[in-house]
Length: 491
Ligand SMILES: Cc1cc2nc3c(=O)[nH]c(=O)nc-3n(C[C@H](O)[C@H](O)[C@H](O)COP(=O)(O)OP(=O)(O)OC[C@H]3O[C@@H](n4cnc5c(N)ncnc54)[C@H](O)[C@@H]3O)c2cc1C
Image (cartoon, rainbow, N blue to C red; front, side):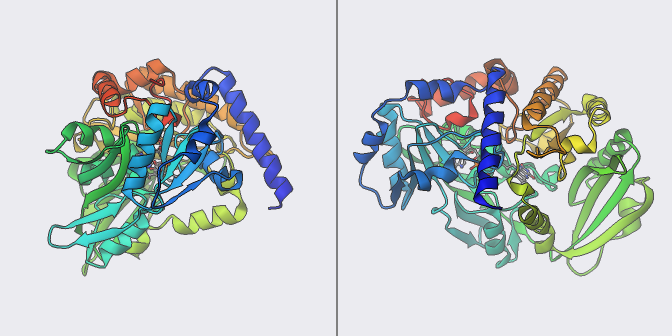
């Protein structure tokens, strides 16, 4: 792609972003930008001595005003490449009294400016990526900037693995622990946040704290799935389990949403698979409903009939064996192809929500009836994962009431030049769908691009809202952390 094409694509998404904001959402950090101290750049020149580096040149800052969504662009004043946790503490302590916003950033793969900070400081966790595995305690101690593929490699060297992976494993540990981290093994092990033993967190006052479920528990519970609001996670101790060598995967086709979810409920109910997901794929102008279940094994492959004999799909099931490491990283070839075609760099107005079981069939059916494959864009797809809510024990990972919820992800790609709906229209569809999901008692899974109002955030956290707000005030009294989430107004 030449520079001109790149430039026009960026111009397009900037226009979309302004259009989306014009409908009245997500103005928090822009409101802050209007009040930003004019001397912020000069202030950074008086920053403390650092072990790492502070970037302030516009060319160095360009990557930090973008993310996987390519929908929102906010220019920071500086980015910290920390040489130590002390650097993060010193810079946060420096920024707080000046009211300079600070956004922690892992891989920048959220879709709606969540890891950006207008006129603020980006803390790029990338350099803090050390990993050490302790087979005696079956844990990994991991710098928050490490990506999960590196955690997998280090763990496998000891025959161990994290119990839960997201579908894409080039996301940072700090990034997914700030959100949740949901995947095919979540129906057994909860989200990644439910498998954390201890955290090191730098709070909004620049204090370095070690916390766990039994030590400084308020901070621990506000940092996990806390969307960066109370502190920067700098290190995590993660639970590991024995790794299998092989995986047998089954793809079963169903004619409707209801048929798919009925099979998923049955499989969740008896826990027969180690890994369970569901995908709705464009096929022949309509949709194909796919249950994807996998069983781990070492020497002896599982009994196919026991696993899928009573799941009643149509057509012949597809069965495939893979090495565990390839299975966990099976999105890698698709990502390489999307990068090669350029679609990876198109806007991604993704919808991610948790649907209550009672409303899932109706909501998904109505959504698919109203959506054409072209609406999703060339690489768009829809995911539907059943998750037993009892497995989700992290207070701030909001899921609906009921025994089972469905993670519903409408992964849209907006192409600037035809095919898919423009991004602004897709954002409006996300908003409409979110309102239907909220009315049915569902939640958003806050990693995508759903325009939210302050009242939506209160509804999102329900009975936990007061505790979240109290934790924000206590641990981030200057109100500087992760403003791109747009949850709390600046202090
Ligand atoms: C291709 C793709 C596939 C995905 N698949 C899944 C999936 O299967 N399951 C799933 O659950 N999610 C999935 N996601 C969503 C993903 O888990 C989240 O977007 C995650 O937050 C991205 O991590 P990151 O390192 O890019 O975070 P960033 O985008 O850099 O940051 C996300 C948010 O967390 C904050 N943050 C980042 N690091 C820290 C830290 N160390 N301490 C405190 N706050 C921090 C940021 O300020 C920001 O608000 C997927 C995303 C993509 C793009």
